[in-house]
Length: 387
Image (cartoon, rainbow, N blue to C red; front, side):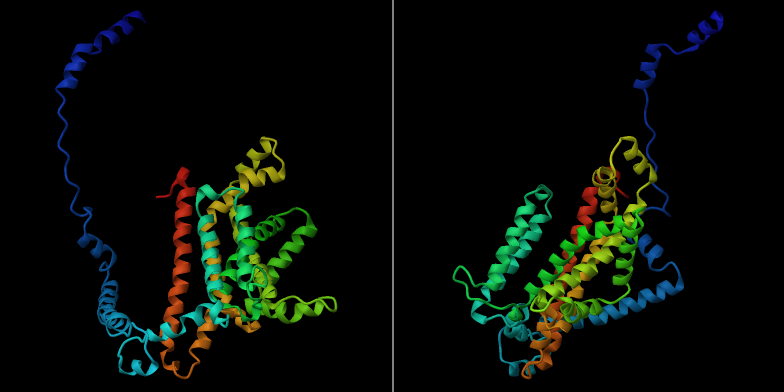
């Protein structure tokens, strides 16, 4: 045993020889990647757009269509358009868009029938509302301060819109309309529906039969009917169940209907996130001696909500656009005020410009939500970032 060990030790190279070999080491020059996998624009085009004969045909057709449509759309939108305030007759000589319609009707589209001389109030309410949403998006503000900012901000917005105090003229909410109504219904609706959806998702997975049956029945009933039906029930049928002499404002009824509808859809999103959590997470919480609510609040729900960010935001975007359905209960949202604006006989021919203007507003809000969800998903997935 000793001889074998000593011979093995003697066979090892000396320390000085090892240092000499390391000092004389010259790395081999790196060889270029094979031409077949070397990145480049031509390779990308060949692999993605011209890899088969039918893909090549579709690519050429798309290039031809874009080459004809994009210049024409650019000319209509910018080059040949009328970009200044002018009477409707001046638009007859213009071959492009008549943005004079937007100059003429933008205040009605944004604020509806709100008194003209008081329209600075809904404008200030919109700015305050958007400001609260932006503040809530920053991580340093994710604390108890939001529990103060939002109630105070909503009260200020309501005072601005309604008036009746602090020297502001009273304006009934049947004169409200446009962008403030859309923002109010969408943001408040989704904001209040979110905690309700969590409770419904947990209830649907509950082992208590009565709670589970109630949550399942509620979710399936609401998801089984269109939003128009829910709005109609809230507007027409709900007052019939109220005690005599008690009435609820139609704006509040529409808000409750949107909350109920959004909560049912978000509940299924949250439930999907709960089911995606590995069983080991639940077992680890039990091993730590955590109660059911401690495990849910500190371990399960944070992970479930994090992995369901894309479908949650998708639901928010859908509800923001679905607020246009409140017109059936006589509420003037952004889309409805635009429709009323283009009914003006003098400007009826320029309805496309009105549609484009409102479409841009909707796109800006929806695209902002989409980009924020991507940023939020990236921030919360730093520990296991996807490639």
